[in-house]
Amino acid sequence: MKTAYVLNGPNLNLLGTREPAVYGAATLADVEQLTRLACEQHGLELVFRQSNHEGQLIDWIHEAGRLHAQGELAGLIINAGAYTHTSIALHDAIKGTGVVCIELHISNVFAREAFRHHSTISPVARGVMCGFGVQGYALAISALAGMQASAS
Ligand code: DQA
Image 1 (cartoon, rainbow, N blue to C red):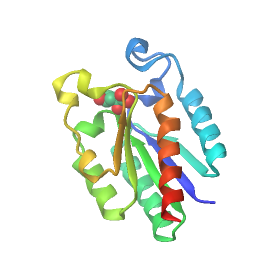
Image 2 (image 1 turned 45 degrees about the vertical axis):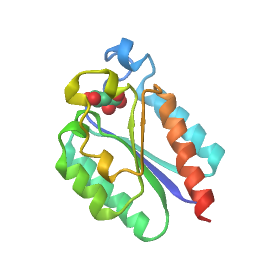
Image 3 (image 1 turned 135 degrees about the vertical axis):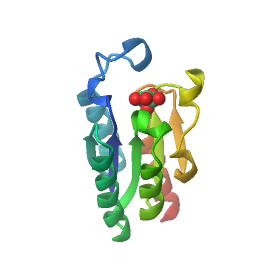
Image 4 (image 1 turned 180 degrees about the horizontal axis):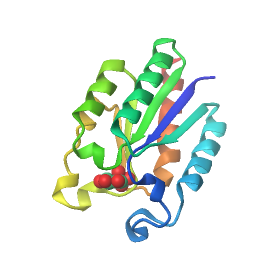
């Protein structure tokens, strides 16, 4: 069984109380639960994590990269929060490990402030999921599973 890595960046631990008009009422624990259910439905193992620290996210991408090298990674889904808009280090980690990456945002970043329209991750992502609320996590798992099925 392959593993899906789902990494969440800064401030996503505040889901449920953070700007509910933008991000909804679900907590990160709720998001983990719906993601786990989607993984069960698609026969994937799940590693689900959150950090407010860029270096920690990079270490976890390297960890996912080692699974990728062993042929055991279905892919990496990353909601890098605001680091999406600034982090060349996250870009380099994704590129350097060669993991299949889906960039995810709960909100439609293109309908928001101009500084959210630029992403350092998009150029190294297989696809981008944004604006579907927390259901985007389940949709992204389904997308990874679809890629697995078409590769085998
Ligand atoms: C976000 C969008 C980012 O612009 C923002 O900084 C976040 C969350 C989203 O999930 O919609 O922290 O990635």
